Image (cartoon, rainbow, N blue to C red; front, side, top):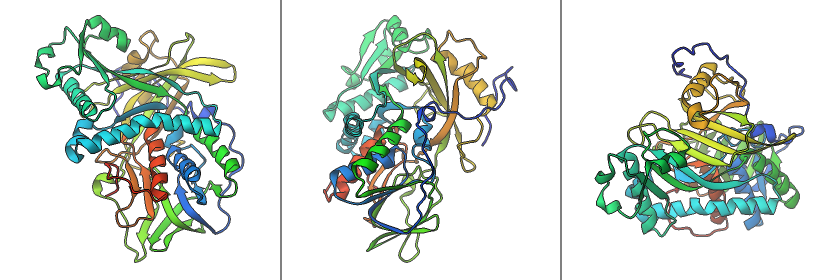
Length: 464
């Protein structure tokens, strides 16, 4: 990794610490590993037992009579799913208006509709599986400070309006120096309010922020969810569902007869394979002639490592999600800050857990879950991010959790969901094109529809 500079006066102030995720801390014991011990056949091979793989298996089993084999190289939910920010949000990592420019407003709006509706898919998964995961929903807020921030998000809202979607609420301070510069075509998409209202929504006395975008948000432990859904699938579909962990898929060969996979010395034959990994698994995908099977460059995962920290608050506070843009223009190099506050269940009762994040580092070597959390970065977060999360919290205190996880980005910032254009038996549900894990659930349901033979309309998610 390329280290970030520690803030002045804090060099060496914190030691490197073990990475400890609050979501993994809530998991039940997995029991012994269950690696694949013999060659096997299935109708569908799902690679990766995170939220994308579990959701894919859930909807395929629910919608078809196919035999499903789910293979995981580690343990269920221990990758990005157990090491994320645990948010329920439905916006893209790229402005919706930009997606509309590339693909057309109709396809962009339909993609956004799918993400918005994923809340219902999450509730369906939780209800049918009997999951006890706490799911909290509320209105979340994003702080904006420049004309660029406001116009970009209002143009996104314009796509939503034209597509018949729920619009995000936007308020602009009457004190904003850019108020009269907002283009007239965006009138009716925002309201003007006193600056005191901006402070109230953002829970921050920082008058750099002059506007707020608000929408439906939420929090949940996706790691615990997938662990519980897996247990349900093994019971409900015991006759046609099999799970193996500690099994790494090294190679897949796609051909007219289906897919052949080599996994930790075992052979798998399947009619179709769905890749639900975050792209850092090191497996090789080839056709029957030995040629590599790859996606368009804009759809190939590169990724970063995201860093987060959390602390327990004695005061019980309402769940919330906030984000604060820190660049002058959307897409600049300075990461935005995000904060979530939620009810956290511990053996001794319920507490309020406040989580904060924003820093990301490029990956220059394979990520390992047990790598320590850099002390200098935690010091930097304590100095820069903590005031957003809880300004009353004194600096220098220990954190209850500090963790890191893979962020599977793509250059095009649009998730890949669907069948390879030249190899229909190879499908994908991967990539971080939305914040939070709802896009993974949406992708799982869409993959199931494809495997039932449904002819779906073209989508921004289609593999290329």
